[in-house]
Amino acid sequence: MTSLFPLGVRIRRNISASVDRLEHWFEMRVAARVDLGDPAAWFASSFGSVGFWLNVGKRVGWCRSSGRSAMARVLVIDDSKFSRGMTSRILREAGHEVLEACDGERGLEAVREHNPDCVVLDLLMPVLDGPGFLGRIRGEGSELPVVIASADIQASSRRMCEELGISGFVNKPVRADELCPCVQRAIRGPATGEDQ
Image (tube, rainbow, N blue to C red; front, side):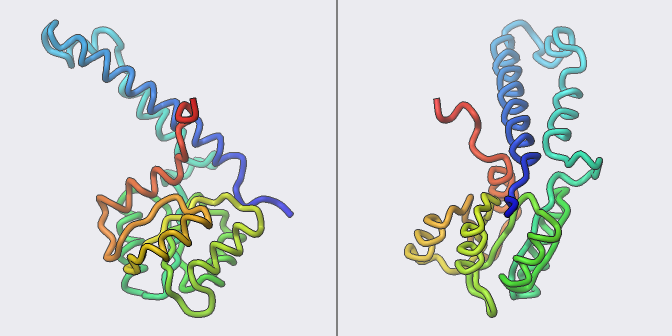
């Protein structure tokens, strides 16, 4: 059985982590030279168009090789049409390609058919609920990043999802300033230097 987590996503995670470390290094260099006058002028004279190339690198790190302009393909699984629509709108405005499913069973079909980079998952749904969906994909050996978006804030629910390998948890109603960074961290995965 093939893994639902493609090698390309792992490669993108490593590229993205490398770009982030490079950006941080440049920020530190600029901060160290503030005493020399205008940091923007120093940066431009020292590195030319590095900012432009960092942005290009970041886009390459997030985009699929097919050349789509979307940052990532995100599947939103939620039985509430209103909540699913709100979550999808936030992600689209952030530049992601968004797919939708109304329950866990249809979500599994979408994962197999469309190979998303990340899933935003509700917990309480008919047919197949969030924990059931997680159990099924983990049982198939998938490491697909999953972010839980739920109004269920019980510690036991959260702990159960963490045991099934979720990448993040946001409370409903979802807010862009919480959801977007959580999805980005989930897609990026842990930085390669964190284990050292």
